[in-house]
Amino acid sequence: MTVPPPSRPPHPLARFASPVLLLALMWLVQFADAVLPGTFTVFGIRSWDLSGLGGIVLAPLLHASWAHLIANSVPFLVLGCLVAVEAARRFWAVTAIVAVVGGLGTWLVNAPGTLTVGASGLVFGYFGYVVMRVFSPGRVAHRILYAVIAVVVIGVYGGTMLSGVFGVADGVSWQGHLFGAIGGGVAALAGRPRSETRAVRR
Image 1: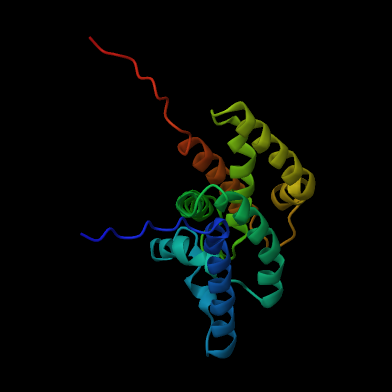
Image 2: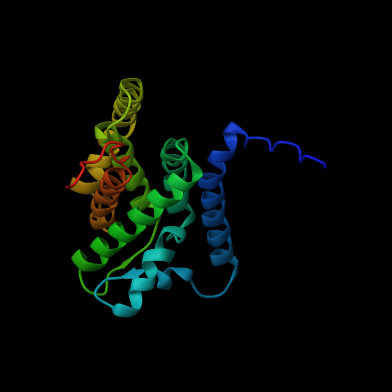
């Protein structure tokens, strides 16, 4: 009887592959949009248009210009990796929640017919997740680590996040930023570990 060799644990850096691959997909989509006729941005979130609800999935992959994509790339990668450090599954779960909450909020609150694209909603969502993760139950050491990370993230990106909601320029969706951040908070609360002790019903 042959015993199969024990499987090797995944490399610690493998969990960061998810945000890197998602960012690479954004760049690939932008390149295709630049060389193909027409524009992909029409598939973004078109507010108050039922046919525009599909943009909830597609809008984070689409950008109005190379400058738009470049501006989102670094904060997306940094904050996305801070989410992915917990696990690849957690990264995709947070991304899905942020995309749905942020997309629906943008679709509902923006002026009818407004077209919204870009990954900034995800960026704000990851920021909201990292900050709210501090309040999740867990070991004291973990909570201290989360608090340190949150303080650093707020120090680096806090001003940008506030100006992205309260001081946006014309043509920038504060709705996508705000509801993306709310989606990140929802994801942090939804990902809280359940208590191991449950009340016994008689």
